[in-house]
Length: 150
Image (cartoon, helix red, strand yellow):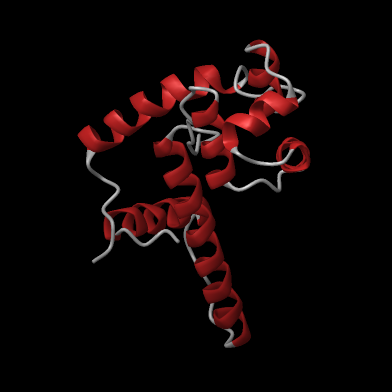
């Protein structure tokens, strides 16, 4: 069964949740990475954190470096957070509101479908009539109704 995108209440609830997350996004990144940031904020040395985690100093340093390189696992981040009495907060934050994302994806798919159809029709010497933008929007609306934008 396809996901239905046309439930206004659901879309509103989803957008409200993301709105709150979007407002904190710029505050969610720290230059040195969260492991080191929190460790320093708590006055912990690498040795202190390693001792709490029963890990080697080198492993904590690797985790800090891995976080900076985007190569640390969520499991490692969670373990580090728990050792510092913190919660790990993990989320996907859409760049745009959900309705816009859905509409943009539907229009892109509709455009691709209609351009392919127009090419085939031109090859068969069949003219395509009507406003292209209107046809794209009609098809996009149908794709959204059918839950078929991907």
